Every structure is written in C-alpha cells, then in structure tokens.
Length: 282
Image (tube, rainbow, N blue to C red; front, side, top):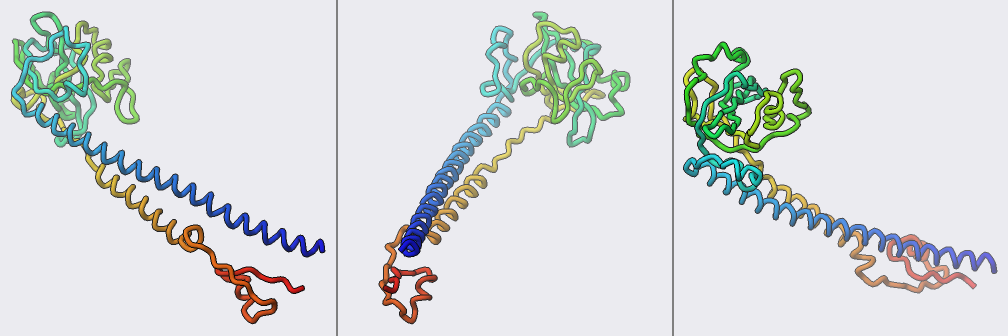
C-alpha cells in the first residue's frame, strides 16, 4: 500500500514540476521579449534625435557668421543651443600665453594651437588657431604666422572639454594637454574674464606661416537603425522559439489516452511525448 502511494505521489509530483517549469520559463521569456522590444523602440527614438541633431548642426555650420556671444550670455551657453554656431570675433592675440594640445588629424599627429584673443572690452576668447606638426611645436618656428595687430577670426563655437582625453588626464603642472579644457588652460596661463567656450578657427582665418585652420571634424555616428533592427530580430526569434517550444504543451490541450494494463504499446506511451494515463495492474 505504501509502495502504491509512493508511486502515485511520485508521478503527481513529476506532473506538477513539469507544468511549473515551463510556466516560469515562459514568464522569463516574455519579460525578455518585452525588454528586447523596448530596446528596439528606444533605438528608433535615438535615431530620430540623432537625425534632428545632425540637421541642426548642419544649419549652424553653414549659416552666416554672427558676432560671438556677449559676456552677459556666457552663463547660458550650452551644447544643445550653441555648439557649432558659426561666429566671428575681433581682437589681439596674446601669443605668449598660447597652449599646445596634442592632436591627431588628417595632417598627421601634432598639436592644436590655442591662443587667447583679447577683445576691446578686455574679455578673452580662446581661439583654436589650428594644427601644427610636432616639428613646429616651438613658437619660434612660426613667428611669421603670429600677427601682432588686431585680427578678425571666424570659426565654430565649441564647448570646453574638461578633465582630459581618452584615458589621459591633462597635466597642467607639466604643461601636457590632451583636451581643450578652457577653465584649466585659463588657470594655468593666469587668464581672467575668459569665455567658457573656445572657437575653432576656419580656413578663411588662416594666416600664412601659422597653424592650419579649418580642420574641425563634424561626425555623428548614426547606427541606431541597425541596432533597432537587431533588437527587434532577437525579440521575434525569441517569440518563435517560445511558440515552437511550448506550442505543443502550454498552448495546446494534452491528450490523455487510457491504456489497458499490459497493452502492447504501454511502455512506449509511458516514455513518449504523448504519454497518457497509465493504469496500474490490480
């Protein structure tokens, strides 16, 4: 009797576990499906944002040059509303306060030459005059390209690049610069009343014998559609796998076949995928 009860409870326990496991697996799979769909939708939204950004920047870059923002508006300058605006500014270069920032450009490795421009109101705007190769790092090799009088510079407004470059921190105490950090450069050079942005001088502002201007790279990778299609594809692959895996179980009624004890195919039905109710011999 006890053996019969044990045998009965064991099949019962097996049936409970067999049903419970697919339900948990289904729940987890549905969560994963939802997450994948959400990621795909998010990438579609990111793509729309990126296209709007590219269009906005293109309009700013090709617009006529406007006067550089006045000091009163400096606290409100932001990347979203101002970066890559085409602007112009006049003043005199302070060549003895220039800063070299390491760069790799289409001209090869070298340095950006950042020079303060003092305006008539006494405020300063840091100008990225352009690129010089390593052999022209010393200012004495390009004195002919350093004007003493008043100049007008046109270029693109750029936001400060704090802290340093990729895996490299600026080291002002050693005069090693890997990013155009306006505040840190101003502090290291003893500059005051400096605009919180800098200008990338365009090719039209280039002076013979001076740095090479007009090398600003404007590139916004836009792979969001590929990412979205990848997430959606994974989601539908998962949905297909769920249907194939559970289509004959949770989504279809099981058939229960009562077999006569000792039937010829009883053993096969006990172990087969369509096993029915087995009648124990009396």
